Length: 308
Picture 1 (cartoon, rainbow, N blue to C red):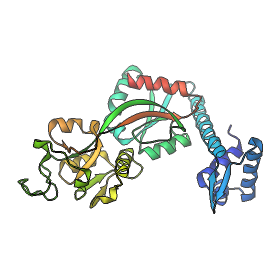
Picture 2 (cartoon, rainbow, N blue to C red; picture 1 turned 135 degrees about the vertical axis):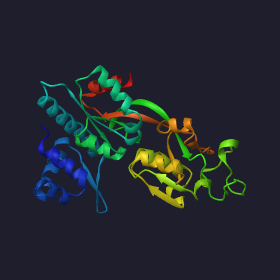
Picture 3 (tube, helix red, strand yellow; picture 1 turned 90 degrees about the vertical axis):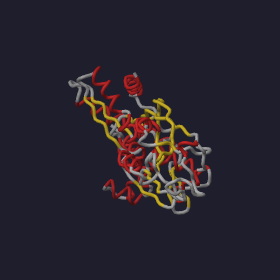
Picture 4 (cartoon, rainbow, N blue to C red; picture 1 turned 45 degrees about the vertical axis):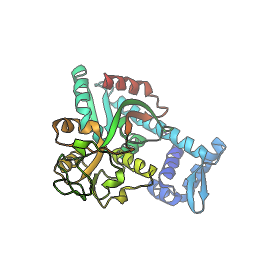
């Protein structure tokens, strides 16, 4: 059982405020301070420091936070296993939307053929939400395409995927008349002429919501060139990969996503790739779990089953 003082510590880490932590725990603020003081005395180090009026974790506090989150996660997993000791083992995991929509169907079909009595609970969310659920212990592991802190999570690479820009095959770019003869962007498909990403700023960008791994890849690429999503004249945020694909096919804008998500559309000519200078990007899809988990061998075994 996780010590009540560790629960206080994790709540302070979450709130970064002693008063809000006391309200959330329904105990007094002096009690919160006492619990933190006990831990600092026990480990003989400071766990928090103030920068101006803001509360921050020290390096030691960050180490304790990561270890405590893993312990909490493992305790919840253990309780779930104990309650289902006489039943088929349950797999609770998360997948980001691209992984869930594109890969998990065939992965789980193959898995269920081999393990027909398996109890499976899959949550589909963006990367940041899945990391939060991992920390809270509501899922055991996750398949994500987004970025994560590799000092907090153990991981196995599932695949490496190309990240591309796409549009409808008959999409008319800004400054290009329907015959494609103006001084603006010309039809990219026949000539294969490369363009800079800044040439797309007059187009409507169809993009996933903040917290999405698919969006974060684009944001990091733009940031490396001192650019931003805000440089696009029109931005439409859509939380559904399927809706983004349909809107792009209908010529309502352009989008950036993983090639694996639209491979069939590209083959059928329903979408086409926009060739961009300096935009040769690929990114890992990773199978992740809390670092230091006592169930690491179990997660590695499931990873192997998923990867067959």
